Image (cartoon, rainbow, N blue to C red; front, side, top):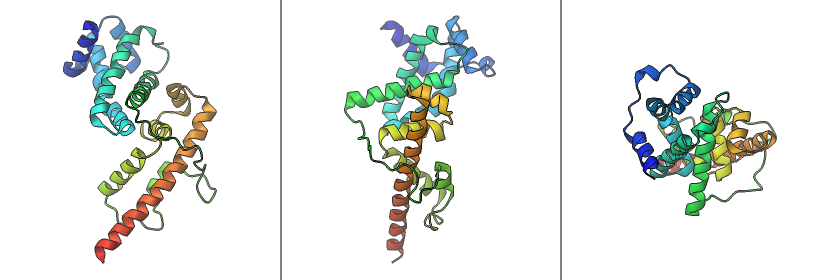
Length: 224
């Protein structure tokens, strides 16, 4: 327990040295295994913003995201000796973080219900990507939206998605992980990654369209 408390204190107070700035994630973890404590702090700071943001979107709570972030890096500390330095650190870290986030949901009994009947593909049968949905206006409905409003709508739509769709969408489009990296992170087959991501985009598409229509209606009501 004392060792865990010391690691948690490092997460709060550590200030990584600039000497480690040019090292890869994998080199830093190897250095930490060899006794370089500053290398661990460098990893923490390198991933703090992105990983907390990912967990915040996943858990819809900043406080919970901070707690799970610390738990994830505590697990990195405890499992550092088992890390294969020939593999990438980021997918390994996100595997740990995603598992910790799912544990949080289970403990709080707040897991979102999964929809097994979500349609695959867009309503017209064509392939659709998240980027297309965000960049291409739907009948001009979102043309007048301010960027801040648009970002808020995206956040609301993503936050309200079923958990298994939300996590794969965040890993793919926001964290830019490859299919193989996502498969490793979620411990699911590659084919499942592709089909689940496809369904996730379709789920987002339906919710995004509904959100835009509601926003448009609110705008018309304010003008009248």
